[in-house]
Amino acid sequence: MNSDANLAQSAQQMQETFAQGLKQVMGAMAGGGFGAAPGFAQIGMADAQATLPPLQIDPLKLLEIQKTYLADISTLWNSGLQASTSKSTDRRFSSEAWHQNPVAQFAASAYLLNARTLMGLADAVEGDEKTKARVRFAVEQAMAAAAPSNFLALNAEAQKKAIDTQGESIAQGLTNLLHDMKQGHVSMTDESVFEVGKNVATTEGAVVFENEFFQLIEYKPLTAKVYERPFLLVPPCINKFYILDLQPENSLIRYAVAQGHRTFVVSWRNPDESMAEKTWDDYIEHAAIKAIEVTQDITGAKTINALGFCVGGTILGTALAVLAARGDKPVASATFLTSLLEFSDTGILDIFIDEQSVSYREMQMGKGGLLKGQDLASTFSFLRPNDLVWNYVVGNYLKGETPPPFDLLYWNSDSTNLPGPFYAWYLRNTYFENNLAKPGKLTVCGQKVDLGKLDMPAYIYGSREDHIVPVGGAYASTQVLPGKKRFVMGASGHIAGVINPPAKKKRSYWTNDKLPQGKFPAVQADWLKGATEHPGSWWTDWSDWLKTHAGKQIAAPKSYGSRQHKVIEAAPGRYVKAKA
Image: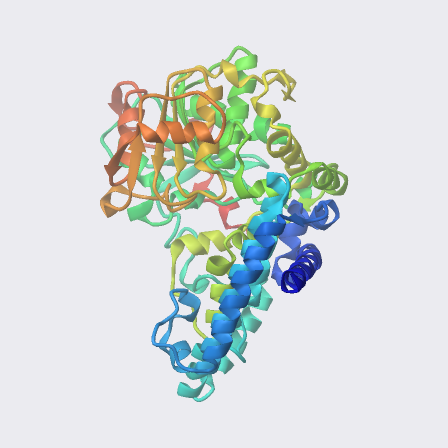
């Protein structure tokens, strides 16, 4: 009994220590720790420490975790510094250098044991789902930051490289650190290799319209004939459009042009202080709706086909609802790629959103100001800290390596600002209150918004492993759009799932013509049970669908724009080259 009492007392001390440590971690995340503070503070973690209720852990689970930990730590301690015959399955510690260094191997083993135990405690926390998700996220951040691989004094692989290069790797690492401090972010790729308009965003075209919000790019046809109904792409304004036009071989824009579509793309302006008071209404009226009107003016088409990607899909959906309320339906079909129209399932981003955090953002920038692009980019990177942060810290600074050229990561580092009022409105009315999906709840551009009036055919795509727009959240659009719909799920994540050209013959996608109704995200799982997997890219499926809504083929235009909308400059234009 005395032993059990001691164990219970020790377990209680473990819980108290865990709770106190967690508060310190969350405070560090909001106030400067882990290198992610600006992004976390802007999006909502600044208030997480204050709103976190007292932590309670099931006593039986706590005792089990403690027993397991004591047994494992005893085994590890008894093994001492003896070399192990097996390598770690964790890639941070899998190199031969870790295996050959008993001290480093012991440090890695102890770290992994502590990480497993802390994650076990996080999973055992009692409370609502948001509280448990916040706890787990905070523990993941702390453990990712505390890995021995992140420190030169403990990283056997970096130490071996320093010896092998006679200290040159350390010198180069310091050079890399100074370079990244100057540019303001950790290098994920060799950015010197890329130049927008030279080897990314190279599809031939011209800017045919611009205002203070966007430039409209028209692309040169690659076919003798084009479909009579033009095609407009609305990319996310939190990133630059050339994610859809990285290289010729993986460009969705070039693919659409090659399929015979007369293609136009919105290239968002990177906001500066002159746009600090712009609102959601401004972006709908003067950007999305204006882009539709100009596309119609240039082509003479009564209706067009449109595509929205990520936040671009939310903007497109809102714009179409405003137009529908005005009695205008200029879009014959709409494609929504990894977009949210119904925000019941927002995945990990939900941990950042509550009344306190949203009210704080409204107070801070609801009337004016800018959300800095690097703050937002930092937050998204820390959603996958080992892959998108610490991996590069170790490689760049401890090993003195230059990351290899990678077009997608170059784009990922090319951040954009957001106007504060736009951002504050977006947080409250979509992520927090889910008002966009409530018929008549919102007034945008003077019109009551009702997505139920968007009765055009819709192609809705979600990525299976998307951590930004969960596939269940993407599927939710099928529940609020009343027209004929096709939902397709692709493999991989938010970006890699979308940018999957057919020529690569990679991954797969799933289709199911039946669209079950129900609660999110479980209803998407019901859809998947009856889905059929197809090898390769979803692009071919989408292309076949889009052609059925594109009308007859006509002679391709021989020049850009029109008499009213003349060429301003060659694609990709000035706006996309502006740095945050």
